[in-house]
Image (cartoon, rainbow over all chains, first blue to last red; front, side, top):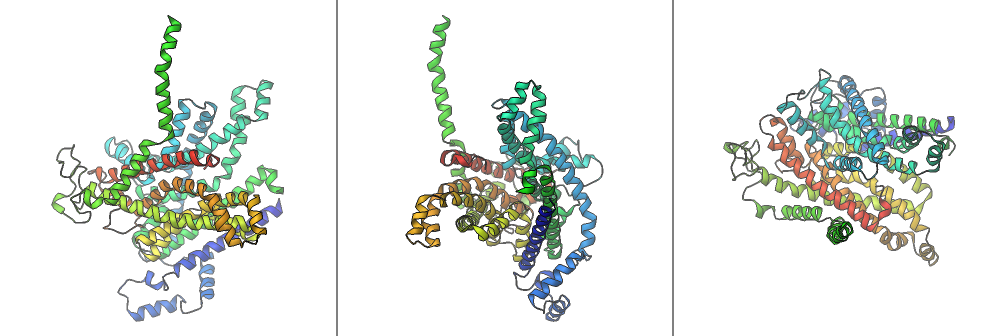
Length: 305
Length: 296
């Protein structure tokens, strides 16, 4: 177990290093990142001065080392637009994003689990068809548009919910639902197919023969085992959630890091975009590592595999 | 009497069932939509009398024709700059389909090539490539697409590259699996004994055998690529204005949600219909060509 954790940990660090190199390499794609940081009408002396201040007159490996050691210490540079350290902006916004994502994930699980299980048990019925429609629509609807249409219906016309922003509990409803909806589609489809596999297996038959109540067979014996493939896809749900958060936070003016990256794009604020990408990369890799360790804890086959 | 009724009912039921089954076999509606979309994109300048970029402020924010104040001159109304919404949607189809096509070619090509190499080479090459693929798959890689566009500036080429960047891993993983199973077959061993180079085996022997899978994968990803392009455009990281794209049109309508719902509604509807059509077509193609891919 310890060896496994150690190996996964080293792999994660390597992945993070590779990603940081990728980000660093991309920032040098244009040749000179100063061009990204200064206004177009900057004078030649300004450029030279900034180049020296940023250490851009040194070799690439040295530059990378400076970049990565600063990032580790939480120094992501200063925002061009906001004129403040990027770290401070991240600190303000990260909790908002995490709260929204957590609520969205809860909604997704609460919708996907019952729907996926019932669709598998009642295969071929109206509920199964409904689940199928949810899955197809989940793949075909552009997330940001769903958010806008929901605002139009529930906030502008019916006036039941606030249009955007943060404040009360009600502010969570629309963005969290929009964000969660896209996890629902994939999660439900996967749960349905793995439930179908499990329901046809020998131990479920045995449980039924033993006279275990059908409810217990489905919700305890079968669901527990059907959850394993869903857990393996944890990383992919996280990726969907992060991608979705950028769009949903933008639509609902939610002051999180997703909206921050949007503002970074609009103002071509390179340090901000770079910092959000690096931070998100770190978080995603950390969560993946955590899930893998939990997973190995639950399933001994992986520990010794 | 009861039996007579049963017998007489049979021929009535059967043709209906047969027709439904036939409909299921060839997805007529999605295919029609896809054909219409492609034609619309190609013939954009013939189909509409308006320019997609010329601003006409007196005409701004006209509603669709069925609402009060609308007219058939602008069937779906106009946007905040007074440009005809339908015209911009028609031209927007060009960007969506073009980015989709080019992005798929590059992303799919690179992904398939890496998958073939990984599957054939095995060992360390395989381990390394698959580690990279897994990392890319479990990662919100759209972030890198955004970073790329911010660095290089928005243009058609940048967006295509960004889309390819998001896409390649999905191809690499599946094609590698296929390559692994084909590699174990006798004709590959014979080719190797006959002295074919690895390059030749990959191109001549492996590639034609993964072609089916590749086509299915491509068709399944079209819809997704269109959504990725629209998402990038919506965030301002797409093909820059004034070129109309569906994503940026939705973004333009965001400030007018309360007063002019149509500005962002119709482009989104266009995305939904197109993506749905491609997804249903892809599902059908998968079942028809390669049912083993059902879990995709």
